[in-house]
Every structure is written in structure tokens, then in C-alpha cells.
Image (cartoon, rainbow, N blue to C red; front, side, top):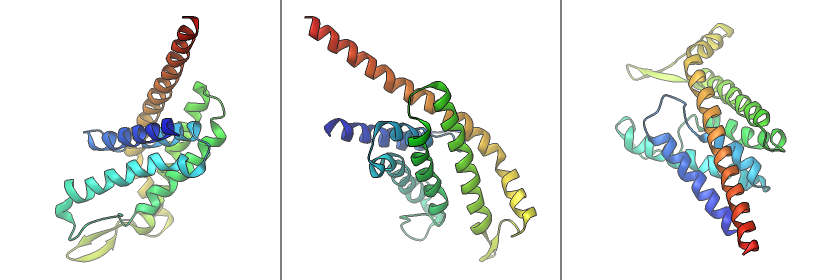
Length: 195
């Protein structure tokens, strides 16, 4: 149990740092953390915890410190949080199905699937509920038509490219690091048993 708590804290810290350091838009470790957690933990609540906690804590910092001047009061959850946090939960749970065994193909497929799910759901949320303030009047960013939806997804394509590359790189890094740590621990155990 203590090992799980340390892993959860480490994953949350990686997620927060990855979102706060300068990076291209959507190039963060959140999806990779959700996928690694889906492999590491059995309890579905614990599987979704690290990525959601990292998102929420970093959102608090981003919304209230970095962009605090844009808000009149403390922002606990942004108006679009369901469109962002929902796909992360789905991706973490999907990882329990796709990553039965740590293989490059499983991790790549999960990472690409995660990127696609996040892109489709979060940008649908932007289309359905996205507004901007023009002279104090909230105006939809995109028309509520098929054309508006296509425009929304088209405008978001550069972010998808960043996310796809980021998710693949972070997934490779996190899974490789964890596998290396396990193999080193196994090797040390063999050496200690030998002595």
C-alpha cells in the first residue's frame, strides 16, 4: 500500500510539473499517466486518481495564478471541465483493456487511442459550449451546425499533432522508466539473495 501511495504522488507530481513547465499546447504527460496508472493499479478509483489530481491541481494553479487576472473569483473547476476530465477517465479505463501486457504495440495503440478520444471529446465540448465575450455578450465560437463542428475540429488539428507526439513520448518514457525500475529492483533482489 505504501508503494502505491508513493507511485500515486510521483505520478501526480509528474503531471503537475509537465503542465506547468513551458511546453507546446497539449504536449503534457496526463494521458500517459492515465495509461500507466491503468496498468499499475487494479482499483478503478485509484486508476483515475493520479491523472485527475494532476489535472485539477495544475488547473487550480493555471486558472488562479497564471491566468488569475481573467477571473473575478477563485476558479475551482473551469466551465469546460467535464469535457476535459471525462475523456481522461475514459482513457484510463480503456487502458485497463488495451494494456494487459506491456508491449510497444499496446502502449502505442493506447496512446494514439487516448489522443484521439481526448481530441474528439474535448473539441466537441468546445463546439457545443464554447463561447467568447464580445462587448460583454457571450457569443458562440462556432456555429451549431455540421459546418461549425468541422471548423472546430479543423482549427484544433495543430493541437492534436502536439498531443499525439506528447502522448507517445510521455507514454514511452513513463512505461520505460517504470520497467527499468522494476528490472533494477529484481536484479538487486537476486544479488541480495546471492549474498
